[in-house]
Image (tube, rainbow, N blue to C red; front, side, top):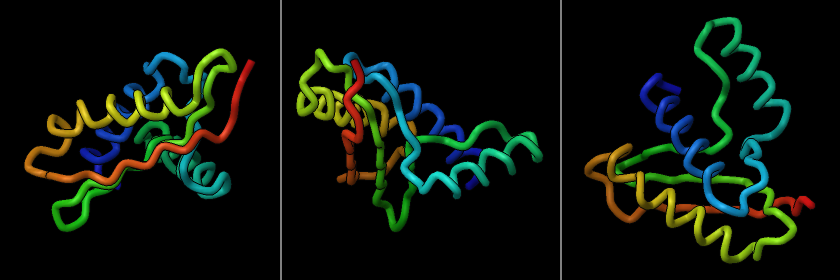
Length: 111
């Protein structure tokens, strides 16, 4: 992942985590792959691996986020709010792209 894409994904991690009702943000990649990227990032000094997956191919941006929702929040509304928050920052992060594909998965509910 390029430094630019890594920075954008890290920004998306922060955007997703800041949405009210989001209790945690989880890696979208398998745990072993994410751990390997974390280790490699630590060795190379490139920082932590992003949790939110962001990629661009042929002018189409794809974003995937796995979240935990607070028990007192409504999961569909929180997932929708995460999507809206990501949509709000995508033009700044990926200028000139249209019709992004955004997937938000609620993988846990936390008390």
